[in-house]
Every structure is written in structure tokens, then in C-alpha cells.
Length: 337
Image (cartoon, rainbow, N blue to C red):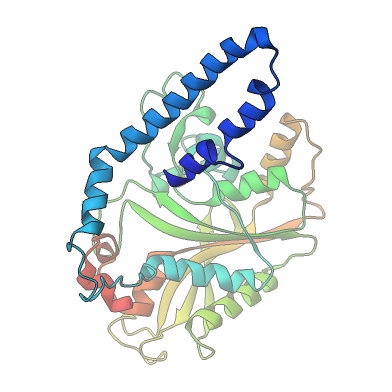
């Protein structure tokens, strides 16, 4: 309010002083009366606004608080406790940081996706049995659209990889964190929505050895240099060959315990070499959008991987039920401060 008063009524640089000098004092005699009336009306309205502010209830309340003895400056102040990262946010940041140090950029995309980006471009044809493993939550009233344009909640962050390849030419190194959704029965280790981090590396002469070396380094960075990795054949529509990766049990050092079901190994993520059908779908979409093809399978190859953040956080912090991360129970979350 004081700044407003000085800006308009200041004796040296107030706006009314400037208006008076520029208009009222130099006005011809025949115009002085009209300009003077309008000048006075402006001055009265400014003074009235200041008077109203001074007499307002809020101003009186503030004034009484500071003039009366209501404020006891001898009392201890209110302590603001610093916040801490949620364990899932912290775990995701650490995973992304590991790959960031290997030269991977971070990609983000929409959680509501089309069938094309979530399934079709990733080699999930309509009615393919593999779609059942990623049964998802669909948006209502989509039946009148073509299947590829229907909206759904993404089941993985792989659509961001497709969008990135459509927008960019190789080489490409990308890690994609984010929330995903699946129509699953919830239990101690499963939720209908969860956090995921996926990665993609595309260039010429990328081999399965590059995939193994990258993930082995990442697991050692996350769980310690003594951790070992091993790969088993698996199936994913968007990779060929595909593999499940296991790490040696971080609880028993690979000797066998209840947490690893006495096997000495814990399954952690899925991975594989990008299926040529995915590159072909990307190039078709690029041509459809007026861009030149860039992912010739004769010279371009790549690998992809994906891991659940909750699963890694449960292992690192010894949490037995994934639902605890979403309870907002301060007694639980304060343990990670």
C-alpha cells in the first residue's frame, strides 16, 4: 500500500506530479478547466482507494496485531522440518542417474496413450495372446474409433521409445521413467499402477554383449560390485532374442535364503534386442508423418530393457508389501529420512 501511495502521490516522481507537469501546467487556458477537473477526479479516486485500504478489516487486523502485545517475540519459533524424498522417487532417481552417467538421456511421455503406440508399433497385433499379459485400463466411449486410435492407460513406458525414434534419428540412448497401469489383482507384490524405468539403445553394430555389459554395470552400481548377473531365454513381442535377467541374491550373497527361495538368484527385469518389426513400424510412421526412414534393419540394431521401481525399492529397503509405498503413512515414510 505504501508503494502504491508513493507511486501515485510522491512529491518528486509520483505519477500525479508527472501528469501535472506534462498536461496541466502547459495546457492552454481554454483546456485547463477540463484537464483540471479530470486531474482532480483522478486524485480523489486514488486517495479514496488508499483510505478504503487503511480502514479495511484486514488492515485493521494486521495493525492491531502489531500494535498490541499479541506478538510475543520471546516465544520459540515454529520449526519447519525439512522434507525427504519418497523412497520410490529416490530409487527412480538413482536408477536414472546410473544410466545418465553412461550417456543416456531421459525421455517422458503421456500416460494416456493410443493403441498404436502402446501395442501395435511394439509388435502386439490385434488379438495377439501377448496382449493378455498386459491387460490394461481403457478410456470409455472409444468403440467408434479405429483400434489403433483408441485411448488407454499405458501398460509400459515403451511408447515413449517409439515416439522418440519417430522424432529422432539414430544413434539413440534413452531411459524412460514413469507410471504405468495394468488391470491386475493387487497383492503384496503387485499393483494396478506402478513405476517403471525402461531403456533403449539404438545404433549400428549394437549386440547382445552390449546389453549384457550395460545391465551388469548398472546392477553393480545399484547393488554393489559383488553382485553377479545371469540371463535366461524369455519372450517379449518387441524384442528378439528376449531374456529375463537375474542378480545374485543381495541378502545371502548367492548362498540361498528364504527371500531368493533358496536359489541364490532373484529375477529383476526383462530385456532383449529390439525386434526388426519395431524398427519397421517406426519407419512406416515416419513416412506417414512426412519424414524419411531412418531405421534400416540391415544396418541398425538396438537393445531395450525394463524394470519395476517398486521391486528394486522393496529389495533395497527390505519392504515386504508394495502397498506400503502408497499409504502416505508418515510412520512408514519417516524411516527413510
